[in-house]
Image 1 (cartoon, helix red, strand yellow):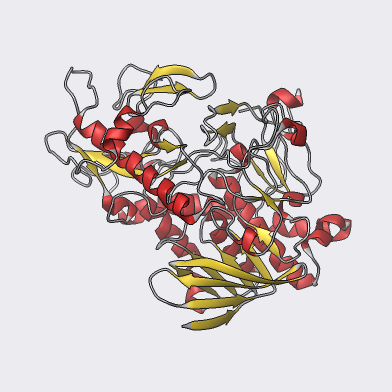
Image 2 (cartoon, helix red, strand yellow):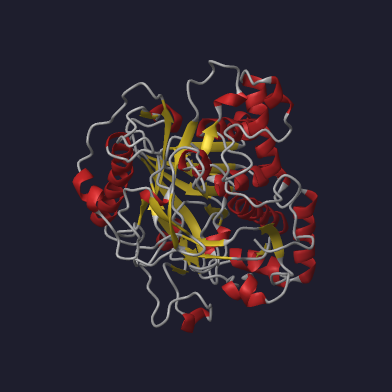
Length: 524
């Protein structure tokens, strides 16, 4: 079956950037169709099951007003619907899970509910239409314009051709870019190309990309046995050790990313450095009236289930499917190893009380609906952000590069996980940075904008532009930019290169709660 739909803005990908872009364009009165591969909108927050990674000042400043409303919405969701303890209810900075990766660790389903609430005025009125379980299949272009994008139903044999004056690619891997003939790059650039100190010597390696991860949720019921069936690839993963890693991957041995110093990670809190269970804990039962939760719940997104044996972008479908399945098997093997063989401080082996919480991620196999993709295709942009623009070492000052065309801000260390080129962590200090408008503008195409991790950054700078608040800001800026261009009948590159238009657009962003610059800050 073939259908056609028309809107002012088509957003392919319902992740954080897609949702933020839809909210922005809807506020400008535009009609939007947003598609999403999985059952859940929200991307990193929901279908990928990754609690927010944020900077130290997130409670005071350093994010957009709408992202702050999302964070407030998460806390209010628990206050309105859960039996919190008096102490937790009185805590204005409630952290439902008390995980120490973030000041706000929460369940994926909560993020989904809050995003749906934020979009509700527009979805209920029909201004925003959301199509879940649809995957992009092709794009039709003419010259430097995208005319339509066709998506196919993943559960039903239906094809929908979507037409609009503007399109956002908010997919996790930049999937619209090759279909629309948008110039882009993948993988690791060389020092010869970018001059970045941490780029590769020699030639670039397009298929050298950061590891991706199938996350899962688990709790712990000490006197019960919730051991899963032995995964098919368990024998392989049980013995696997990369030549750059200090021990077997299925072990408590890991590294400190910044120094690569080997370390033994405990599962549960003790006297050691950190507890893996506490790292991304999304429910702390002590925040709730006794009996609400039988156990704390944590999200497993650890060094031990990072998958780096091959990329899933721009490879043959068979290879992509194989790596996705291998990554799933790695995560399930990690759980099985923890349940059956993991050494314990008391001298015993295994924690059979670890329970895979399929309900938390909404899948039959208990793994997140979508892998956590750290590195996407990236547009060849009018301006590309380099390590030299924000690395503490490169700058030699207390400030990152000032971008006159700023459309937002972000902050995170340059954090690259081990890669499919079998290269180790790159984890280096950076300065709070801006998002330049030039990084959102393709070098040629006029009416398609990136709205996720697919902006004009490098393999290196992607390491700090890929986190939750930044992706949201990118998507929100892209949504406002599309609306602004339609309103004034101009192209995105005209907005950047015309001082009057740029000033008017930045005023629009500021009026809608987008911060364009940092106060004087310290490195992270």
